[in-house]
Length: 272
Image 1 (cartoon, one colour):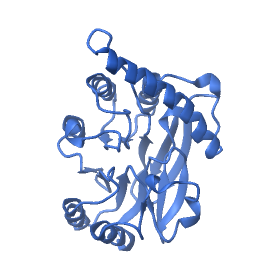
Image 2 (cartoon, helix red, strand yellow):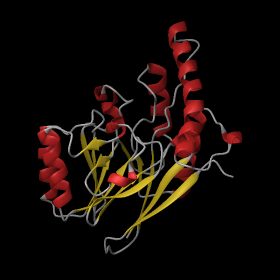
Image 3 (tube, one colour):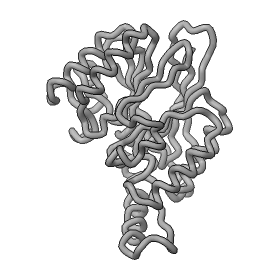
């Protein structure tokens, strides 16, 4: 068994050619620098690494996903392998969909920057709830962590930082503007959305793992309704669940939750 586990996704948009996207998330990298970090920081990193060593197996068992205990790589090596895999595939876009590091620290941040610099393809970095506050990641997000988009000529990949489990007025208005471009959209968010169409796919998850359409603020609900009714939105890509879940967000709109990078899980997406 190889470390990398590919989940093949195809999104048909009637384009003139095929595009390749690679998505991974929830790697929860922790590291430390013996020369720079104090004892408290080092102990925290060691403890968090132990926690995720166990939790990656727990989640794999919950979702009945294959995972070889012989492939218990360190979180830093997991990210190294994911970057190597992405470079080997040379996609049109690499999507890092949140929780790539476990918490903000100088050592974790520096390792993240160093890793992303190894990517040979364009990338889109989205903050997860573990990349907080998002202001610390402005350089990696290339300016705006809350709302970004990549124009791949025939379609857009749009990301919103919903790691606080809500949508802001700024994000809502920005999304309205992007819809006016009248291009197909693949929407990326770290936290998936639970709607009336995918109730049965999320039965084992606590409220923490999704945004519920019937238990959110007004702006977030308006955003969900806007996305649901939009002809431009073709698919949603999410993480956070630590398990692969494919469900209907709305009629004709599929939501793909990518499992954990700690078990080498990637969404290998063909858009055509």
